[in-house]
Image 1 (cartoon, one colour):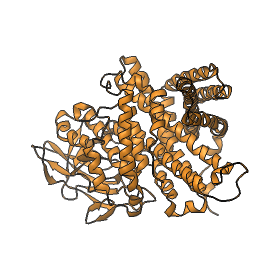
Image 2 (tube, helix red, strand yellow; image 1 turned 60 degrees about the vertical axis):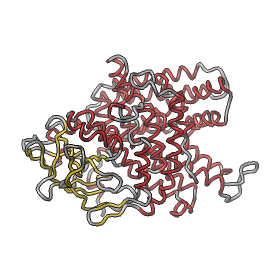
Image 3 (cartoon, one colour; image 1 turned 90 degrees about the vertical axis):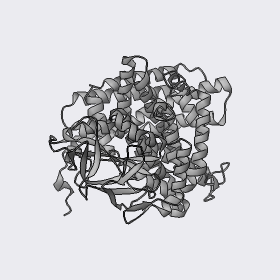
Image 4 (tube, one colour; image 1 turned 180 degrees about the vertical axis):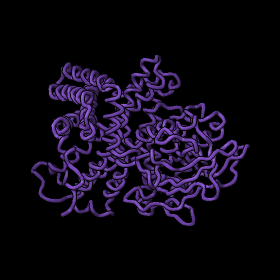
Length: 594
């Protein structure tokens, strides 16, 4: 079925649940008024629907190819990328000072979501370029910014992130790539793996951000520095010079995202690749985390986007497919079967919850950067830091589950590639792994984001969830079961508070054993918060403007979430509090095959 960007739901979230009107009052965002944002999203929707979505299946079937050190992208890819650059869609949130649109992060989140929903493989290149822009703009010297930022912002050049090595997966302390001082630059040598768009034919140059060690580097992550290593060196007049000593030596054959080349990169096979130090020596991981955080939010939005496209695909199939005897008085297609509606309800309700949660993280980013006083900026930085691992981890796990339900709704035809349902499942599977696995996101949430600040950010959030519960109780109409919705929000707040206090008090390994369950529990509880808020906003909008099919659906999805999604929180809470010894008691011999 043709993809349709969910602009109405995006605008509802931005205007009613994410404070777009207030964000538009922040310095530099004055142009982001609701009518302007609506026009921008309408144009982005056209590009996603008319240019990107038609290439999605082509990219999956044709993939990227590799020969003689060169990567050829799928048919239509280079032309689509050229259109993206010409239309200014490469980096919408980069400031006008650097040549971007200067849009708020929360608006950029909507654009990212619809582009990645239309074509996940394609959107990975702009996503990583946006992260490279943020790292260079935040930490590189003025001279390096002048050389590299302008064409990264336009998209004439793309950016990559080079962390992983064959012997160092998620353990960055094990990195061995070297950087030897050589005049005004460094000579980089080593091998990096799993480098998305490390080589391709869409842009004139590729700017690699590479983690490596200086000769005097201390051991561990404190000894990592960050370097800009371009594919082609840049002359003093801005033109491209000689090819640098960096090459792609292979690309991976993958379960999904076939059109996105995942490269093994070799640096310095002929004496050393020329690189330029970003910021201070040995502080590279700190700088790279800026890019990683941007990428983690972006990957969370990929989870939302894939879920949205898989849901649309399944809905269309359910409306057309006739199979079995449907209950009397219901639709004649499989949409008439209650279990089909149950699965579609799980897909749609959770996708809508994950969307708002991701957008609220992006709104926190805007406020952390531009709120008028330091206290507010610190408050929203804590909020952003807390939400990032939940958005990344929960949204991507949802994408796997949602796209799997999409296959199930198609029945046996879902297992057949020609129906297209399987692609969303295959593409979604990597999102729980890259930019830090779900387990790593969970440890980040439990350790860095909760225990390190004694739960301060989580308790601040609890107060807002309780405000939502009180607001729901005060609704005096009958369009929703406000008792049930307010009880859900109240329970979500209490659950987060209790789990946070438990984590802060524990000094054993239980928080690590519980971490993945804590992350899922936080996702479900925060989903309850945003769905209760969505019901309140839909009710109030109905009173002002009259009921509509969209608003009625929004109220029904909140009720479905309360009935079918949130109850899982009780089970997870029990597991978190009571079942960690069973994890810690297991050892290697328990898994040996007799």
